[in-house]
Image (cartoon, rainbow, N blue to C red):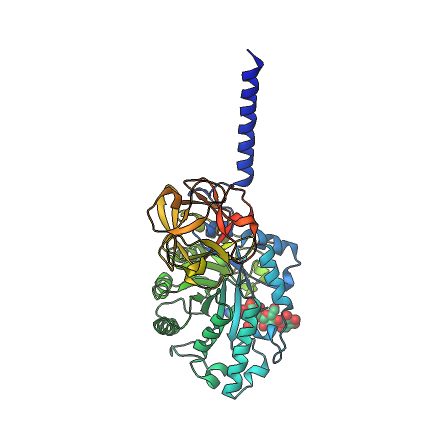
Length: 485
Ligand code: G3I
């Protein structure tokens, strides 16, 4: 045998090994539909949802706590640090030290961040609850919302804009509070409008407890409020159901409550889940109800370990005092894993695609509705030219349709650096993209025709940087977080 063919064979073999190594290193496999995820966050992300925990800044130095938090949860809610008494203890004196620690932890760990809460009658400093003049209170409330929401603008997944405004009992009306008593019922609408102006990219939630039972007067009161807001165009995106349950867990009609609220055109989120004694069945049933409702987009437990809970003597969480997983943890994990694995993308849902290296959104330039308009990145604005839904093209591929124009993203050929533009939907392979799942709703998107990845040019962080295609590297300028809208 002559040496020539041997060395060619050798060369080919080395090339194959190299290629396999490169693709193993840079392109994590898409999560198979039936692969069981091993953490709460990853398991929830299989259906495009988040699983989070309320976090206390004072515990971020506890390594057992942060180990569990970082490993298991995809979202963080500040348990107390963003409340009014923490952020504006005296008039116009804003203190963000603890809130910033939580926000920084979320950012450094690549977690979603929930804001809790802008307007609440409790944990409200006396200088606010003592105000009797409507003009003063209005300007104080709006200044508080604007200052706090602006500080975290672009970082917050959802804000609990108004918390616990409805009364317990059978009235179905707002509770007495300085806000209702001095400003009237319109304070909620005003708070939401002010929050939207301060942070147009956060989802704005109304959050309350004891609104899980569809027959409760309080639930019906919240339902009417949301229906009224939606009918008049008052900006509201979500209802947070706190889900503090007794040992029996959620009421039998909980799913009806979730689906009825969702049918008004808002997301629903379980924002403060804990269940006395943490029965595995009660936890599984609660999680299942959320999974059964497309617009139930995430679940947060109110703390990490039982020892972190505001109702610690009832052992209501998923980890015990030693940081061990409890039976309820296993029940929740397997319930999340049992969901038909649709991957991180849901059809029929609008998303913002945020590039991970820049925090900027995929955007159709100048909001053009014309075929051929370029895709670029731009600071998240809340505009419909930054909103996309996915159309199933079969075989694990999707078309990506811009909401403002109805046109889909297409690559212009097979070469690296080719433009991505919007074009009329023909379902051509140049319009089909396969997601690779990086967890927590972060994906890379590979074009079917070219085999190349959606990419922000040169990893630029500037507004206006072109979105094109490039060899898949798995780098953060090819990773996009799908933010459900
Ligand atoms: O940090 C101080 C400590 O220095 C002081 O010595 C001690 C004295 O009581 O208080 C400590 O602050 C406590 C704080 O939690 C931090 O632990 C406050 O007293 C206590 O009132 C506060 O409780 C919080 C409660 O909201 C206040 O209403 C809980 O942690 C928090 O889990 C709870 O969360 C609420 C949600 O915001 C809204 N929905 C209900 C939920 C449960 O009550």
